[in-house]
Image 1: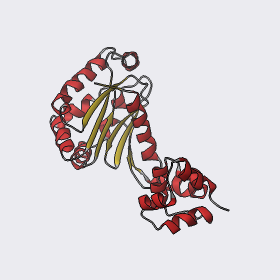
Image 2: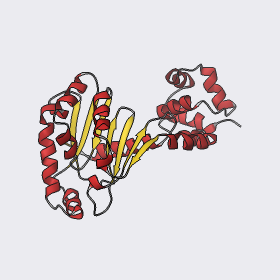
Image 3: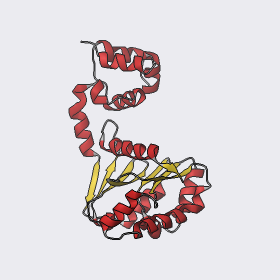
Image 4: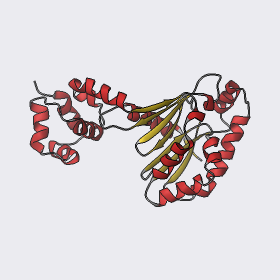
Length: 243
């Protein structure tokens, strides 16, 4: 049976067998076999093809679901019971090692700047080196930040923290490649992405973010957890306003 989902995805995207093959770096005959014989590609090729076509790989190749689940489980490096349990050396190594992407989604995230006083300069240097730096802060004037402050029992202090973080970022904001946006969305997780590593800090109703668990994931081609959280970041980014 032919893989009509893959054939349709190529057509809808306005691509060709040749363009897909060029992107995945395989022979066009290989792509033809993926279609005509419904052959399931290797994990890395599946991920590159699915990303290029803007589709979920399990939709294109249902037989790959079990492999994707296994890979996604393997993305979890470790679990910390609260944010204070994350070693300071880990934060420093992730910040220092990032070369292509630094993406932060928080309401305030003031702890990160307090514990790394040169962070704004570091972000600017990374952008100068070609990295994309995107920071999403809670809009201190928004209803969501006010509500979250009440839920955490700190009232207007959360908005004040967001303003302080904004001020700490000032030295980096004139650097091309560094962008700050303000969001007013309900934030279910704080996200800290450094290249292929992401720290996810779930928010628990009634508890400050620092008291909540942190999960460390590392991207594996074909897995979905890292990509799932980064889709959430992109969703918030598109809804946010430039600062």
